Image 1: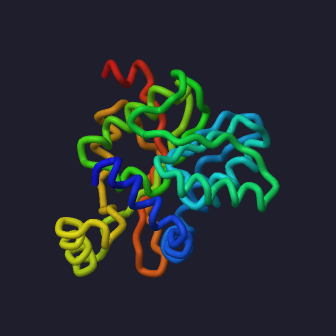
Image 2: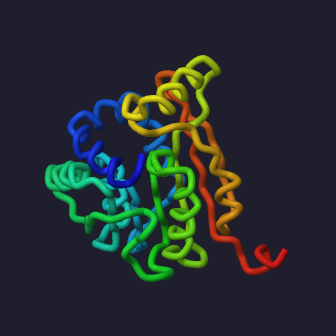
Image 3: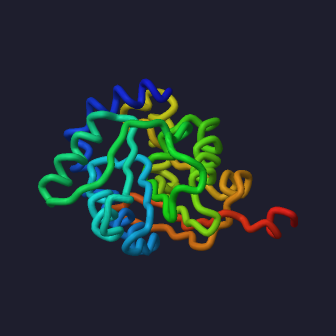
Length: 216
């Protein structure tokens, strides 16, 4: 899907997304928070805030207003605002595109993105990862969660649906992040597979390549 189609689609399905996320994605999202190890006072960015649960917990961990959430869908941003209000928490939310983040270079200690890259067109994944690298501090960290490769039967059915009617599967599909991360200046430190109710997710913690690693 194009970004404009994704925006319209997720505005439409925002009310139902929380159910799917709780059923298949919540375990991986909680693990992402553990791996991110956000500390009080750190500047944190979540790209693709979804239903807002993860962002609310990031705000709590950062203990301040240096926690920023971005989403292409106004519907998802509205859900996140409601979640924050219900929890009595504050964070900065803005509508934005992962491929053109409206932030200066080196702005964030930690960047988190769950189930967003697997929605992007193939050619945009590396563009987004370069944007993440641009806005990360030199010693920053990136935590990603995407749809993993499913068992053979489910994967075949899923990919058929994705290729013929992507809206049926939410516009997402399994993606291999390791080559894209290596090509865009990231070094993988942690890679895990997480399964919830038969749905497999891939979690990655990466850091910017050091100068000596880039030279090598």
